Amino acid sequence: MLRISLLGYGKMGKAVEQEALARGHEIAFRIDAGNLGDMALISPENTDVAIEFTHPEAFGQNLHAMLKAGVVMVSGTTGWYKQLPEVKAQVEAEQGGLLYSSNFSIGVNLLFRLNTTLARWMNSYPQYDVFIEEQHHRHKADAPSGTAFSLAKQILGELDRKTSVADNLSQRAPLPEELSVGYTRAGEIVGRHTVTWTSDIDSLSIEHHALNRRGFALGAVVAAEWMAGRKGCVEFIDIF
Image (cartoon, rainbow, N blue to C red; front, top):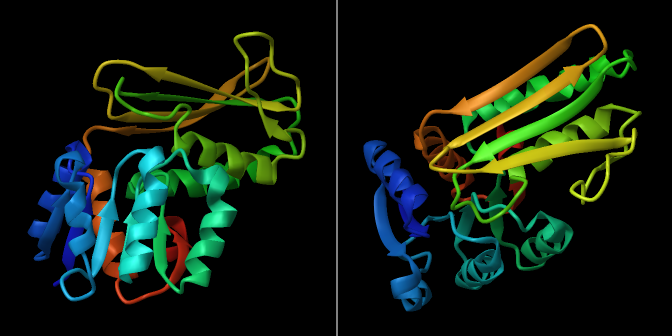
């Protein structure tokens, strides 16, 4: 049994709570905007792992608090990955523990594996262009999603003819060497990510469509079970 503190108690925090309780764990603290001061009470005496789903602006403060407290943190917050080198250095310097992911869904992490393999194969077929599309609910704070950027990073690592993600496409067309990443924010869409390869004669797509938040929540709890008692900065896909 783990003692888990929740940093962020919105829809994802509540979903994580349900999965944690179902797996026999205990919720030590539920931290949200109304009781931020209680974060100072979190310590190794009452918490084995903190699970954080908040906003990019709050991630740094939450990580600092958990490193100071000596508590391992699992984070599903995205939008901060440009600071990843500094975050890794901070975690290592303070001998703390952070497990992060752009997406804790088991299905999405299988999509990551398929995406990397397909991009490697497609490197030999220059007639195919590739693009990414993602859809999320209108409340999501970052765009494109962290999962879309993870998919893009995997493609760029395997495909010689793409060298960067295109931006500011509202003002221009993408260059041939740029990878186009599109997004939609509407309604209560849980999450859909599609990678499409297209040529003059056909197209091929791989896609993950989340039907609810349970898969993300379960993955976060599995990550907490693995990360408890460990140190270092780890990405979820690396534990498979």
